[in-house]
Length: 489
Ligand SMILES: Cc1cc2nc3c(=O)[nH]c(=O)nc-3n(C[C@H](O)[C@H](O)[C@H](O)COP(=O)(O)OP(=O)(O)OC[C@H]3O[C@@H](n4cnc5c(N)ncnc54)[C@H](O)[C@@H]3O)c2cc1C
Image 1 (tube, protein in one colour):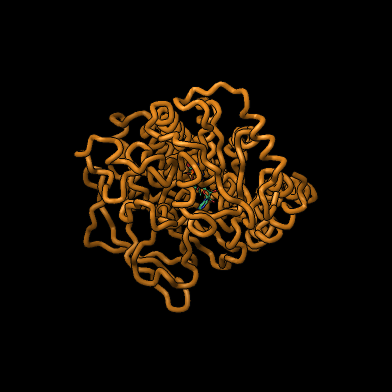
Image 2: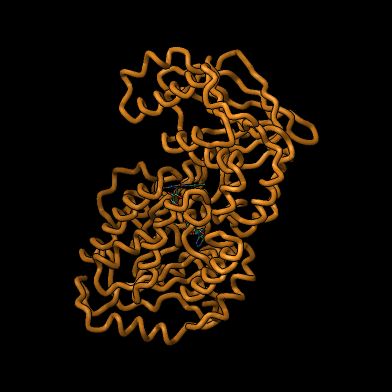
């Protein structure tokens, strides 16, 4: 729902839902009011836990976009629909009468942290990590050098990225980085468009992918096969792609086989799979005619992007691996390419001047989810008194708290942990319940309610059905707001 005033009917319903419930907090007459900033997995999982363990609490989820779910909607690859099933659990949480979804409101733009802290007993910052890291090498700003973050945002329909139009007219794409995000990009580029057509990938991405001339994708990592960052599931999917052959470089696997018996089990399994695939390649098996090629390349660090008008090649320093670390050698290698996509991780940013932010690590200074006072960093162990150490009632979870590592399950576990801390702090009076709190003042704020999101959802599913897809995502915020504004309360 997109309204300029507080939806009164909803407020009454929420108030009724709270009345007559037993409260387990110390100050039982005051309703704990909590604001969660960010409607991604961290936001929804903390909300789910608090609803269950803190009777009588009410939660507002403030989200920058008119639509919820964060990277589950805008990061997870379209051909992994099973991963997106968590949306059903998030929806149940959002539809709890003690929760309000307030979309299209951005911390740092539409609301300030100070305002939230005055209007709620506790504030949880879970707004994720939306920037990407750069390589800091020459020519990184050339046309045809993108980040995986942009490429993923483009095919997944994040508003603002619909006109990225990656140039897929060349023959080769180089992915710098070997994590699962890089493998997602490789798979999307190398998959058959007929398969992708059945997913919720954006129509404009399908059109460009259908005209793609890319034949080879290099997946380049600093270290060796024994340190590969992608996981076995993602590798298996690549090996099964009917449209493409995986080609390993035998030199990368020198001495790898003899290490296998001593490896821990997960590392052993993925290494055995790489070795098996390489042996099949050497015997000429599994190479379909008309093959596109997926080429993992190990022990190379990019030092220079070569090209004038656009990318022509990447120059690498050759590394050797010592004690699991990449050590540069004198040797260099230059590999031609037409498009470069760096995939070397995400980073969070501070969106409000009152956030105690660690610029170096790219996350909020916190200890187990409690935000540290502004003059303190994560390494301060000297202060015992909780009140001297932490910002009262201010917490963080998810990628904003931990840095951008881990999957949805990791985010769930850490968010449940932070939510448990919040519940205990309420029950132990660490969070002061000195009077009720009004919640966010919404008049004049063009927010989108949960019903507004449901209207957008219905429209996306309708547009998708016409094309045989689960949904066609809307990418224009104004269109989203228009549709949400027509929704009933
Ligand atoms: C490309 C990619 C693919 C992935 N694929 C998988 C996968 O297949 N399986 C898996 O398990 N994990 C996957 N992950 C990891 C998973 O997405 C993360 O673990 C998880 O999304 C982190 O949750 P979060 O809530 O911390 O952040 P996010 O999901 O980023 O959520 C943050 C939310 O905060 C909102 N926000 C941002 N700024 C503001 C602001 N100023 N005010 C208000 N709201 C704001 C954002 O719009 C967003 O909705 C993937 C990650 C990426 C990057």
